[in-house]
Structure formats: structure tokens, C-alpha cells
Length: 159
Image (cartoon, rainbow, N blue to C red; front, side, top):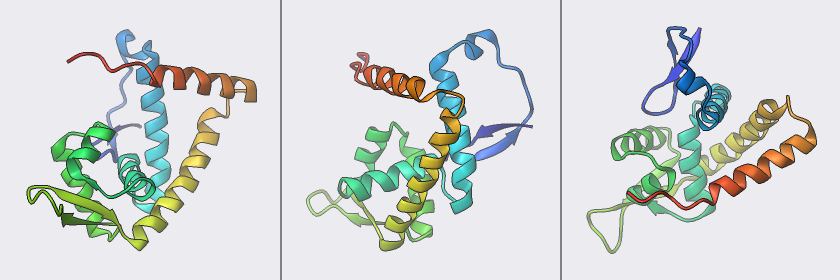
């Protein structure tokens, strides 16, 4: 059975359908869909989704950030960000505190269990990367990484 993700990025069962040509022939869509589906499937083992791991990674590896900064950096809409943070907070992985200089904003801080969950998630995502890239030779993997990094550096389109 096919799977689709809900607003939080968790996988849910969906009716099996064939993709129309305009979708099945789009490389960015196919990369995103295949990678995200496998990541969320594997992260379910620790009750997280890829977007939540992105949040934990940002606030543990960089610094506590506002909800808005996280949403902008990860390109997650505000409503979804709140739902993701609510879930992470309920699990004890993050804490939101008022920003000391902006009473309207909240800073998101990782907790000890959140830091541990991020380490577990990165281990799972390392395994996910191995599975996802398994059909490619080592040379093809390196080439794909170089090409994707080049594409990632493209300037954002004007709004």
C-alpha cells in the first residue's frame, strides 16, 4: 500500500495510485519523496519524523532558535512548526522559553533527552542514507553528492 505524509511529516497509509507523468518524471520530486518516505519509516522506530529531527539538529548543533527562525530555516509553515514543537515538547526533547529581548517570541532549547534523541536519529539517518544510496556505486554516490551540493547552492528564486 502507498504511503503519504501528514502535516507533521509522519507517514500514513494512502490509496495506491500511479503518479502522473508530470510528477513521476521530476527528479527533485522523486528524490524528495523517496528519501523522506524511507527516513520517516526508519525514524518511526524512535517516534520521530524527519522534520522533528531537523528541528533537534538545528537547536543542538547551532544554538537555541526562535520558532520563526526554525520555520524559515527548515521551510516549514508556522502552523506545522507549532504542531511539531508541541510534540517534541510533550516528549521532553525541547523546551520553549520567552525570548529575553522579544516577549512575542519563544526560543527553542534542546533538553538532555532531546540531545540523546538527536544522536539516535542521526545514527538512523546514516543507515537510511546507506539504504537509499545502495543501488549506486561509490563513485556514483560521490558524484551525486557533488551535484546535489551544487544545486543546493543555487540562489533562491525571487518572490
